[in-house]
Image (cartoon, rainbow, N blue to C red; front, side, top):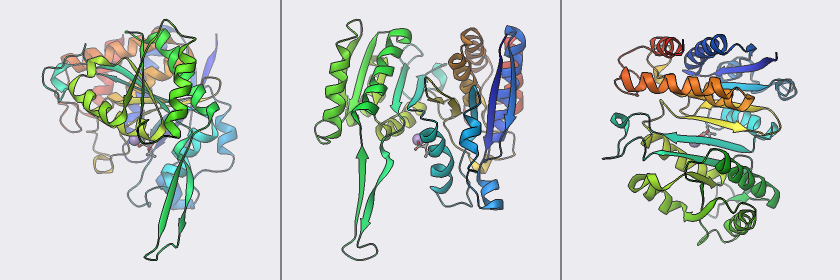
Length: 352
Ligand code: IPM
Ligand code: MN
């Protein structure tokens, strides 16, 4: 039997608190399903940076490549200028480990937690496949005449045929395997971004020819945000670029009940992937034992599915659903009716 090697990066703010609960649930499900794993913790994050001025040690990437998977809490520290940790840790890991997919399920577990009127769990159940290695996140651009009245700031979206195609192919495969409606939507902005989304659209319909079992559809990103609110039940799997994916998945998180429940995976299908709650470090709740750990627990479910423990993944998801439906008063921090560790205990208990 294989022993999985898991790297753990608890990170900043409430990251360590939610990661603790995720690992608690992992332990319970491993016992139940009979698989083995080891964990190794890394202290990358704001505290380490403030102490050592080092964002990520040079050895980190090579070392992380020796693991089966990575579990991340949150990156972002109130005393560190925005961008340093995000670019130096989170984006660096995504890029250097070539985690070119950011997979973000949007699933409503209980009608009570949906801010939209008359929407039920059956209506909000889709997945966003966000390109995770290119686009505006590539960081290409420049200042001209910086600091003068004639200043120009240029920020370029960099899209390669290879990068776009591998993302679109992943989305088609994902739709074929997991899509409930077998429908893939390309979300773009072909009416304005006539270079970038021309490439995306051409690639999308070319690849689509190999997937005649999958229905295809295109929506502009602005309209997509409208449909998320008005008719979320239309969606099954959505594929989009890095920036649009970043934006629409925050909206997605809100309609599924909030950041307390939203998880994501940074996936390299042939390499090392990394799973995280997408809500960030929530500094004001740090150390209070009030933050919702369910997103971090859902990230464990995604991690398990990726390493091939699909049965364990399903069990974790079912337990989360049960607890959300029968116990939790509100998904927001401090309003759950239970502490962070109690919620972790309840999910672990429901598994047994
Ligand atoms: C996310 C976050 C990151 C992103 C930030 C923290 C760099 O917002 O994971 O969605 O923009 O990708
Ligand atoms: Mn984001």
